Image 1 (tube, rainbow, N blue to C red):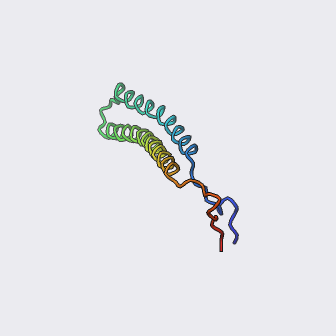
Image 2 (image 1 turned 90 degrees about the vertical axis):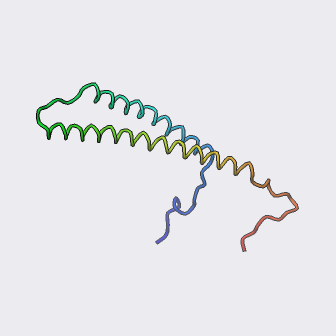
Image 3 (image 1 turned 135 degrees about the horizontal axis):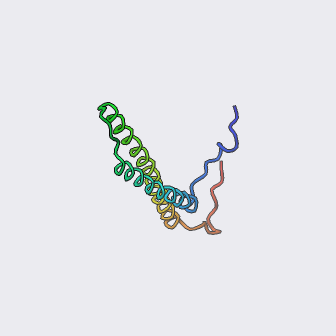
Length: 112
């Protein structure tokens, strides 16, 4: 089986691509954080009242699940933004520390 052209070449991430990804993840994380806060505040302001103990336990479980999942989504995007920012700094640092281009007196590596 031959591989498709998109899988044959591996693209190295650039500073621009990683910073763009970090900014996008951060932009998504901010409204998610606000949404998580609003959900938790709404649940706190409007408690579920019932005489049935099972119904109370189910409502507590559902509230915990909803707040937990929204907070998890926020955390995932925050960690992605931080990781991509760190990766862009690492790539930038490596590019600055790399050796300059070969001079004309040095032969370029030729495949054997």
